[in-house]
Picture 1 (cartoon, helix red, strand yellow):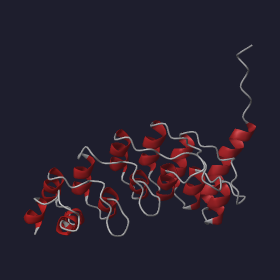
Picture 2 (tube, rainbow, N blue to C red):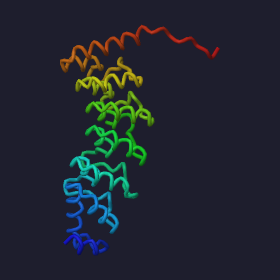
Picture 3 (cartoon, helix red, strand yellow):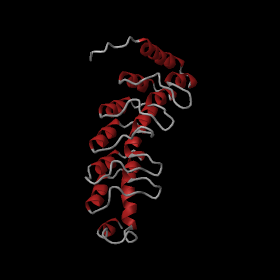
Picture 4 (tube, rainbow, N blue to C red):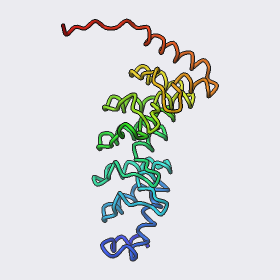
Length: 220
């Protein structure tokens, strides 16, 4: 079925249902040679499976690194294609704590998301992916980017008790004094999660920011 249908990829999709199945089976079982053969014969790397997940997102969720590589190197991949949940490949890579995929997606033109949205930085913070956070901010991501309810990545990291992520975000310049629409700041979320030591650590940084002397105006 695989070879017979590969030769028919230019025919209507109903005829090539077998190629569609082969494509996602190759991804599921991380069969890079089989996947590359299908891509070379014209299979679209942006194909969405029956559950609403683009091929690259499905490959990441299946933890199929060879399939991910083949799709990323296909030359035709849309790095910003959302899945049925509205999550982009970059967001999924951050959730899965795969900084190597994050780095490649950024090079391929993946967008991080704008303020007022849930972004890749929020996902990386919630999953505790400190390396991904560094990659995102160094690539131009706004460290204090706000979600729809004005939650920052630092708040997400604190809420999940991700100590390394909290420290990384603070090192990158995150502001612990910000408060979201629910009335919480980062320290408040840490305390709510029972992470008192982490909360005190954040509060120390918060206090240092509040008591820091103003920088002199050098423009006059």
